[in-house]
Length: 235
Image 1 (cartoon, rainbow, N blue to C red):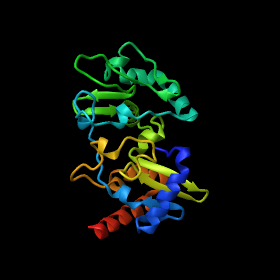
Image 2 (cartoon, rainbow, N blue to C red):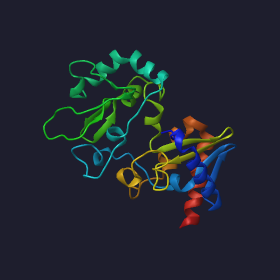
Image 3 (cartoon, rainbow, N blue to C red):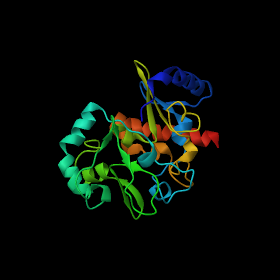
Image 4 (cartoon, one colour):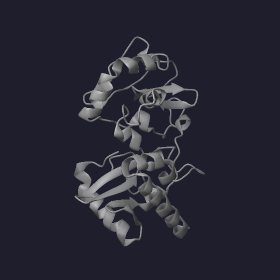
């Protein structure tokens, strides 16, 4: 998830506050860490956030967040649409008759499946199974041994991470957190059952693969160490 451009000034204030309180880490040159946000726990818990199963105040990245792919991401999805439709058809009733409309304006469509008893809408690529929602694009990448991100747009891969270009030389890695959700244009962190889950790994640990893809394995490991050391001090 990328930060909205109109909140750049607020992110700068947030960055300064992190530094003043000893809550700013560094994974590599120009790679800054929002330690409190990355130290909260996180695990994908789709059974607790799937529409029709979830608590009334619970929300999901697959069902409640608008996602607008870049032109390159849209071209990748459109180019593979026949294969995507064949993969989704046995997994999601919305695809049973072939590819449905997949966009609302520039954003990926969120649509109900019409099944009795189900409430809410979900991403057109989010299939519902016994354990909850799963991303069809992610599953197809794995099934066909495509590299991650070949089809699945970057903001979907990032959640709950937030990348902020703070200036020409520095990028802040943060996450949806009680102190950042407004800045990121997100619902409050407490609305997502996956964030703050008891006994779960930290965001830095759970999202290690994504951070590795973004910054490399060495920086991802440094991020985990920095978060662990911060948590030890905070406790």
